[in-house]
Length: 343
Image 1 (spheres, rainbow, N blue to C red):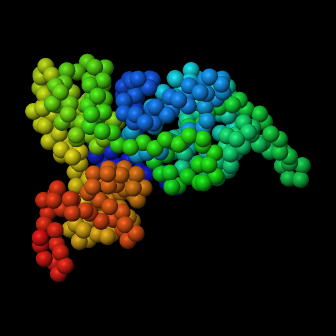
Image 2: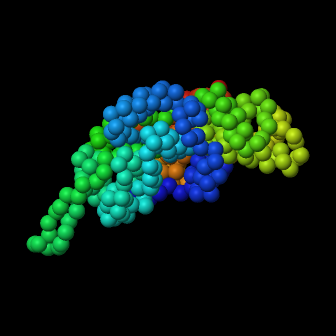
Image 3: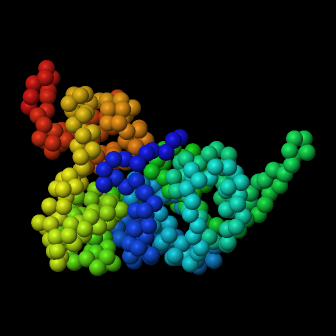
């Protein structure tokens, strides 16, 4: 499957390398600094404490959720809490079985091995992972033709952490080999405000409580987005010579960035408007909609739709995408009933 291209706009967390490097300083290092997702953290704390008490590696961990909610960060926190080495790669980087073999054979005991976008693993590599996850061994073929033979190479017990934005694309045999599954949800406003205050302290930015709340409401419940917005608002404050970030400055900055109070930006509103104006509010197929907005289906499904659905503006149906009555109200567009009547 081809990788979804980076979406247009500021808010969608496409994870470019330079942004990841800037975010690194803001990443929590332990559960105390990792804000939000309380139930998940509490359960993981128990599992980690039990594994450390038995002096065993933690069961393999499967992380599910939209981009920017902290899957990579949580994997690093788990490694820190376990006191283990952390190794990271992504599924597209594993092109051939020998790529995975090179990593597995160099893992030290209890290493946390993180694979991002695990739904994009190639079948041959996925099959190699099955034995590695279950038996901590690896099958390798020596020779070719009639003289070829398979040997099993032992590897150190490790914890595989697989992260995906599309759990439905991960095969059942692979999912069944994960002992722990964690599903991320969008963050509450109170958690987002706490994240802003922590990041502002690290970046040495003074921000008022009301301004932090306004920024939190406009960040789509996503920590990566709120940290980006905080840095952009900091730029406006610096150029304006403001000693601190207040509500008026946040409103002005969001207006310039074309971000509204619900966290929607220009391309989110364009998607909703196209469904209403060209397709009568839906239903419209994902491929047709993706062509209409000039994006790939993967980008539409991975980056745009999750929050629009969460915000109650869009719904997926067996026949296609449809906007909700709330969407008409929010965009201030009259809704047409049967016969084309406005109401």
